[in-house]
Image 1: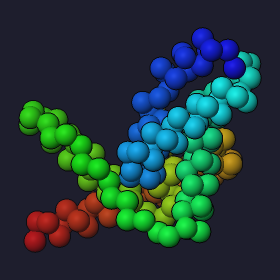
Image 2: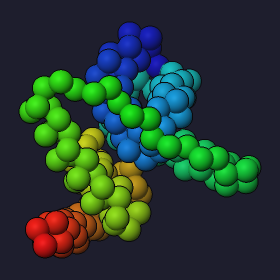
Image 3: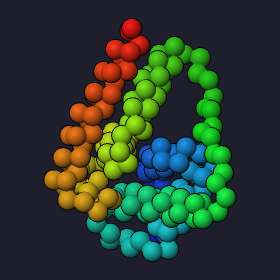
Image 4: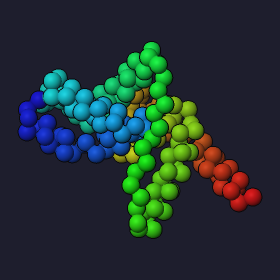
Length: 166
């Protein structure tokens, strides 16, 4: 891949890939390592004329994460806890972050495949066709999984809301 194209690709997709990887692993250092490795693979093996670079990057990042998970299971399990981010002073930002955290916590209660579909759809803003390419599914299967996941998530959120009000 041409260095100029790689630099443009990095600037365009690094933030959203970082968020996607962090949503998978909940560890900043691992996220940074996987992100760096994703772009290294792009430099080494992605052709300039690739049709959908964004979907390819997500697929590589996802595969790197799951390969890391397999290796980690073979080694002694570590206790990686998510790093706490810096505290925001602005009330609106805190409330927005709380809403996103509640949404993210709800998504984490879903089955793995449904989690991935919603994370790619809402946090990475991938189309159903791109998600299908990343997860090796048909777009129709992605559409069905997304529908079921949203329905399940709504039920979970409604249940928690009712419990909080009690």
